[in-house]
Length: 578
View (cartoon, one colour):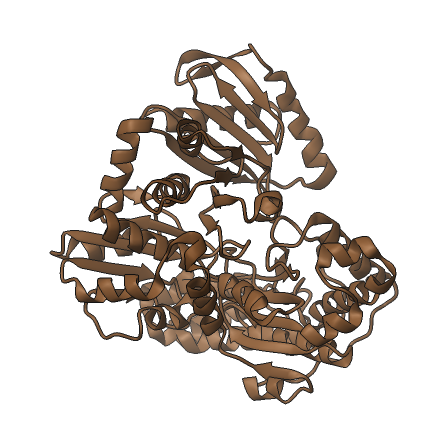
């Protein structure tokens, strides 16, 4: 059967002509992408045709989102065309406008948003961008149109990363930013991130206000006419929109705050380019970072700087676009073929707020790297201060803080929960590969992580794995792992089922790898973290952005993490979730 005949059958299977609601375009796209992966480029034309149907749905959908609009730990996410489309994005932007229109009469809201009034907010304006997802520019056009009509200046960055847009908020002294991204979610997702004037993830009080306003607009049958958009020129033609080069803002912020954090962008990049014994390989997974990495390295043509998956591809080649062991294999292979003794590999998610490392032999997740960054700034850069990490993160940083006689801040999952210690903590990081540092943005940023890794290697003259082992030889070894399971229940029903974990209380006994373990402590900051008498632990919580239950574990032995994962799954099965 020819590709044309085969693709025609697939289109008939997954689509209903003229009926977006009954069509499953992304199920079709996934089938087509799989065909392309196995049979070659001949399938690309069919993929393009399927995406044209998605674009039509995004432009034409006048219904309400299939899922209730809700801002989780990092914004609002949903399926492109079904939840995220022109009208729904315009509606949420209108909800933000209405929030700012209320600040003149609400002092508490002014403080939370960091603005003195709606007039000042309009003048300072919004930093606007999107990641590499399909129809990002089309959706950004709707945001710009709504903001312009409401009198807000728009600083338009085009495709960019979360960390870069946050830096731009600080450098331009903008009132807020909007980034159209679902971060590391699969190809069918779109998303919407809102950061206020501090450039960090919005506080819960703000996202609750946006959510309330959005739902009210839905109840009022919000009406919107989609603005056509075929290129960046259509956005720049909107009154009040100014295009700017966002990465320059990021560079400016890093250089300006060198006295605070001690990192030197120009010197570090220059030193790498001069050294012949060091190679850097970065996998962009087709995301927005592909537009920036070479520029971060001064656009130098060096065979020791290698970029992987740097072409535009909204399907991510059919993979889940997240920093993971599976996705890191390409980087590991590249490094294994190189002769340089110093090797740095990194993988970055689509919107550039997550990063994971390898030296070709040792994989370094943020559980380890965040602690390494704290050790590096404290001991090598001689900066003094506390460390901040989410409760689901490795306790290696806890051990460092205790030894350094520094404070530890350990909030629930979500970068916005670091707000109380911004400017005090040297490093703040979370288990899902997000990090930032003192003197930088209060938003997770893969690029600051990459700069940290480069400086670590240049200063210590070590690969990251060797540096980690040096730290562990003094402070002990920790073996973290994480996983997740999909669930069909959600909301209050899911939370009700999770209360079944309360039977696993202090002093209760649980079998881990066939051995009895006593529960030494239980933390309920975020979900349920169960700490055992040998210092190992497991934590179970509902995801704030996906229909999943996540679990995090940490063993003090290299072989124990898998046993803890198995125990977590057994608990979920026992309470009826699996």
